[in-house]
Every structure is written in structure tokens, then in C-alpha cells.
Length: 416
Image (cartoon, rainbow, N blue to C red; front, side, top):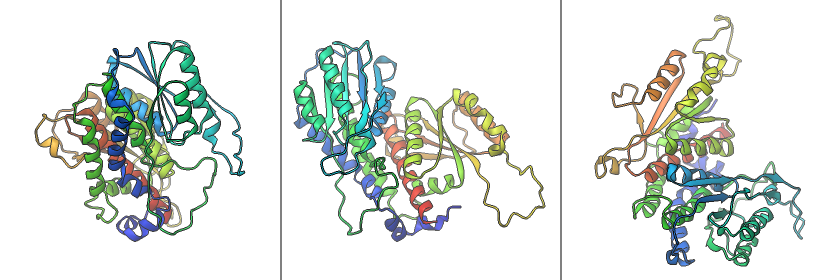
């Protein structure tokens, strides 16, 4: 059981945050600004595309693929965006120093058979050492695809980008201050946790490129506004903010001791739910199931009729439970994008708002049925909605809040 008083102890949170996850999230806005500035300096602002590509394939792993899914949600049905995950894994070779290589260095990718001169391949990597991505760039060059590579300067992937005449964009790494504490050895050295703010170093240049080639119809000031929203969330969700004023801490406490079902209405909220599920697994060590309405209702229905969904204990009511752990129950978190009018109060809102149960605002039938399903089985449903008119800003709103919540849940659970 989570001791939620730990969430109101900034010193305890700082001691638990050995890899600087909270600091990394607090600096996400700065990374977006730096990534946009460096992308322009690398030649993106001078790019003069001759029409829009037939398809955009985005290759990588981890948060690079998350960024690809977010671009697909933002592009909608007007453009084909294909996330390209690794298709195989080989035993990676150790470096000259004998250090254990990361599992990801042995991953392999395969370009689809239909990819050709009409398509664009975007490769994004936080390390730049994956030989499989180097080989993928060579495949794309041989097929005549246009290639864009986001990777750290000086990495093997960045060097390969020059060989295949790709547009190289820099990957902005996190620079955290040294706190003098020794590094904690990872339980799985070849599978280290990912930087929680790496998503923004992948997503910012990807969105700038998409805007340049006409893949998205975002306002001209949408990308700089992302950095401002991330800064505002970092202030609102800072460690020394009390749990009753910090929405991320409140959400973390609500999910403790539950099996979260992350439901979403629409592709924008769906991308945020997928990201939250991945962060809960990576940062908090908690399983969560994500899905979009309306199909998620049929996919998750069986969980409500099973043991996790029962509001009452079916066993002997009078037995002694003092020594028993608290039972796990379902918790539904419903994410929505409910845009308000442009230029209205929704533009000035402080992030996603929790929708009260008695709210009488307009709802789709899928949302109404979700509430009925949860109520019928005594399962708590919490709804968060972003009212920002711009779809990108609504996505950032939802992702920034849930990223902080996942990190807080993991830190508090580690200290309990």
C-alpha cells in the first residue's frame, strides 16, 4: 500500500529520484526549444519540399516510436504515417572497454517492400549506436527514399546519415547537474530505464519536419507553445507543491494499489493513454491496459465481471483481514480532448481538468456507456479532459501531466 504522505515530502522524493527523472521532466520545455533551434540550424528551415511524400515511415524504439504514434494521431487520415518498430534482435557485441552493450544495439529493422522513391524515412535514436538503424538508412538510400536522421552528433548513426545523403538533425540530450551521489547499478544493465523526457527530443524535430512538408495543419506558433506548456506543467507539478494542489501527485495517489485501465476518446487522447501505460511500466513498475473508445469497452468488459471489478468481497465477510494485503481493484482513467472555443478561457486553463461526476456537459454515447459500465460494477472512473482548441497542445497537456504522475507513483512506491 502506498504511503501517500511521502508525496508531500520533497526531501524524500529527491532522495528516491536517483536518476533525476523529475529534473529531466522539468527541463523538457528547454529541450523542445533547443531541439527546434538546432533543427533550423541544421538546415530544416532551408528545406524546400517538392510536394508531400506518399508515406512517412518513422523508425526507432522506445519513445521514438511513441513520437511516431503521436505524429500519426496529429496527421489523422489525410496522411500515412507508419511507425517502424524493430523486427529482430541479435546478440550485441561488447565494446573495446568490455562494458556490457545495451540490448537495443542489437536490434534490427526491415524496410517494408512497398517503400520507395515516393516515401520518406525518418530515423530517430537517443544513442545513435544501433547498427540496425544504420543498415535501415542504407536500405532506404538504395531504394531511393528520402531520409531524415535524428541522432546525437558524432554517433555512428549521425555519420551514416552523411553517407546516405540524409538530412541530419541533432538529438538534444538531457544535462542534469551532478548531485554527488553514486550511480545506482541497474537491475538489468543491458535494459536501462529510458530518460522520461526523451520523448520531447524525438517529437520536437519530428513535428518541425512534419510542419515543413505539410503533413500536419498546425498553427505557425504551435511548436514554440509546446515548450511553454511543458514549463507551466513543471511548475504546477513541482515536488514541493502539496498533493492537494499538485494534479500529478493526486493522480499518482489515486492509481496506487489499483490496476489502471487507461481509456481514451479519440486518437489524440489515445496517444496520451498509450504513453501513460508505457511510463507506468517503466517508471512505476505498474501494469496498465490502454485502449480507445468505443472498442475498449468490449475488449475490457471481462475485467469488470471478474474478481478485480467486484465492489464487494465475495468471500466470508467475517474473516480476519488484519494480516491480509489490500486487494487490487480496477481504476478507470478516461482521457479526453474536449476543445473549447479558440481564444476563450480554455486557452488559459491550467492543464487537463478532472471532470466532476455530476458534470452535465455534452458526452458521446461511448463516454456515457463507459460511465455506466464502471458504475454498474462499483469501479471508480476518473475523467481528465483538456479543453485546449489546438490538438497538439491538448496532447502535450495530457502527456505532461501523466508523465509526472508515473514518476511520482514510482518514487513514492519505492519509498513505501
